[in-house]
Image (cartoon, rainbow, N blue to C red; front, side):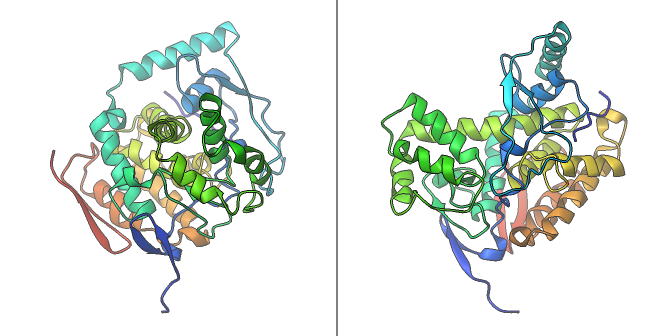
Length: 343
């Protein structure tokens, strides 16, 4: 497949799950970058683009992209994507062909045992623990301008993903502890504000997380917004399991934005330096270019200046030639060593 074009003093600490992590190490996404409301695709057939972002089958297509030059970095993102089913014969054909191609590929990171490994590595970066299942009820404001950060992947009250999660969950479970906070969540979306959420929202989140149904909803929202799109586009770029993980971690960290600091902007920068495998390039060379581009973005964000997740984790796997992300794995995060034994 050819190129798919898409446009010296101790640091203060915050409690993240089981550990206290220096605030400068807390790798949460800036509000202006992460929102799905900023996601638009440029220069690609809609069916192809939507299949990558939203998955296959009956998934929807993005339409009504923002006009060129529209400001998408405001506190309240002006663009809310509309969605539609593939409707032209060409779109339906491309959608089906892409689904068939993806289905024939090895599962890679989507295999249950590999997804477990991915979740553990991400948790080491996000919460300094391998116990990612212990994070469903966590919630705090880590001071990154995105309001409350909560749950298994760090959904934020200011970046739309938390709103999507709670809206979807409330549709199926209208009497849940968070339902009454939906009006406030809609108001604070795109901002760092807690207005209408305090003082009870944190307790309500923790209470909701006691329910297996809410934990399942967190998993499904994580997969729909971050995991599945990242794995699909990595496969289209010809990347193996490690590359799929690198894409997923970048999607979580930077969000699915097309600006230079979002996932698709980083990917575009990498593709200017090296060819993807699908374009005939070398996998290690391309992944190094992608990590370089992602690292450069991290260094200009105050919440992301510690680049351990690249320097002493992903780059370590890449330099060892472990493109299949095979265990055993040993890496460091913020100076702490983590291990996943051989399976």
